[in-house]
Image (tube, rainbow, N blue to C red; front, top):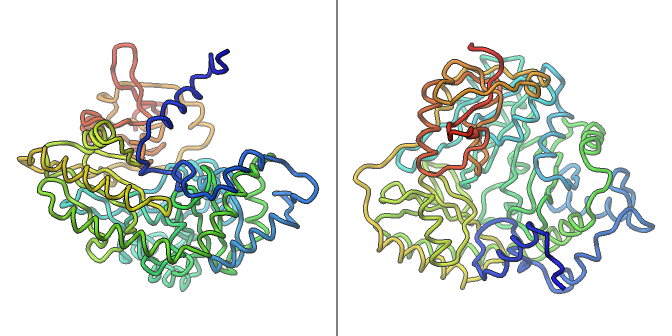
Length: 480
């Protein structure tokens, strides 16, 4: 008897895991390779609830509290919390606990969609600080300290800043000067450090947000450590943050049935990283350094360097730039996937991102190196390098009231949307950075950019096709 006759998701998952692919994407345990046999054999049996001796997530006094205390010590935090709804829930809890409805905060414009959603939900007004851009690599880079200072000088009533670092490409925002500046002005610094949970465990990695003075930060364990998807943590980094408010905020937005399996994986990941992280990450970075030297011989594809214009980049995240070749990032992703059975984390118009963790072997990295060198020899050079600078600064922005955001149903063709107010986050995903935010005026530059990335193969959330294949966008009421 076939036990899986009407289980399309199970069937799809079984097909994927039996494909014998080399995994260069999240979660960091790489299909279980990052766990020891004892943990793996018990993982399903760990799926329990609040029973005698197992403590209570919403009122921790025993094992959960002890594990979170070990987490706090590992990162040097004032207090640390498990999150079982991913880093997005931590972003929401942090904003809810630290700011009030109507408050104003500084936010880097290339933030994650979870930040935008939190602003709408809690009625907090953002002042967007625009990123820089490096045309040579087609990459947005963090705003400089002068941009943050100017933004606060122009908005002295802002209560603090929320910064995303590192970004999906591993590029890090320097935080020490920013945290000192904000604290001198009596402001808070919150950090979305979802992609940097591993930074604390090797001096070959960039400094953590807490080490640079963040008052609160959120990290996704599942992205780079051996932990299950949705495993994330929130750290309080200073006494400027009220732990009681944070505790209540985390509890408010967390399920009353938290996953013990996810929490157990965070316990495992923290213990492993503390005991073995320095050695394991040191070896991983050495192997990757050797691979990057070999890949530097490529003629059309390029490795994004680990330092860009003085900005540190996560060395465990290999990013390949295709802009000097005659193929797009989407095409490179597909070729590596179909011809070499290697699955990257993400791609965009001219980049492919490969995430390496402590679960990757020298053999895995050697296989990827061979695939990239062979692909480079089989493709051509580009006649001209295409630019994909996101038009972040072209639109006006006023955060919509939650009721209008939820209730708006009007859709119009994207090509006719200039001057209207966008009702959705329009986001090539990943990396999950909105090109248009809800409440933002749609410009001709936005339309041209979205048309361009769609032609290159981007999957753009927030746009849909009607029966005739016309790209449609949801708008709020009438033209601005």
